[in-house]
Length: 123
Image (cartoon, rainbow, N blue to C red; front, side, top):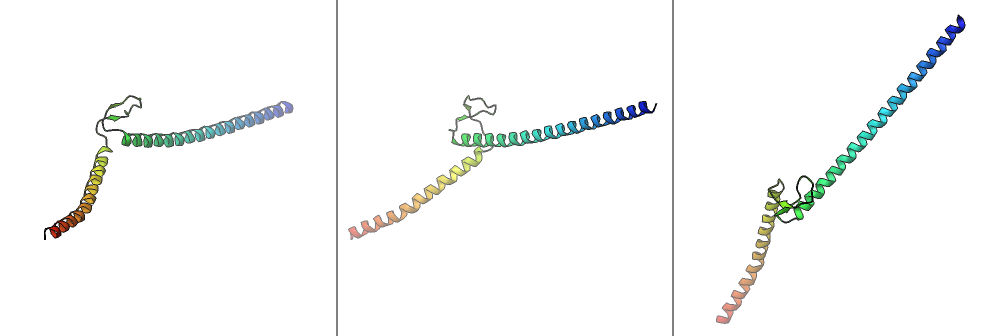
C-alpha cells in the first residue's frame, strides 16, 4: 500500500511539474507572440508613414491634372481637390506676390534714374 501511495505521489508530482512546464512554455510563447506583434505593428506604422510622406512629395511634384490615386495603382487620374492643395495654392500666390513686389522695388529706382537723366538732357 505504501509503495502504491508513494508511486501515486510521484506521479502527481510529475504531472504537476509537466503541467507547470507547459504553462511556462505557453506563457513564454504568448510573450514572444505579443512581442512579435508589437514589433510588426510598429514597423507597419513606420512604413505606412514613410509611404504617405512619399506620396505627398510625389503629389506636390506632379502637375495639377495628374495624381496618384488613393488605391495605390499606377494609373494617372484627373486630379480632384485634396486637403493639401489649398495650402499649396496660397503658398504659390504668396511667392508670386513677393516676386512681383521685389521686381517693382528694383524697377522703381531705375525708372527714377532714367527720368532724371531724361530731364537733365532736356535742360
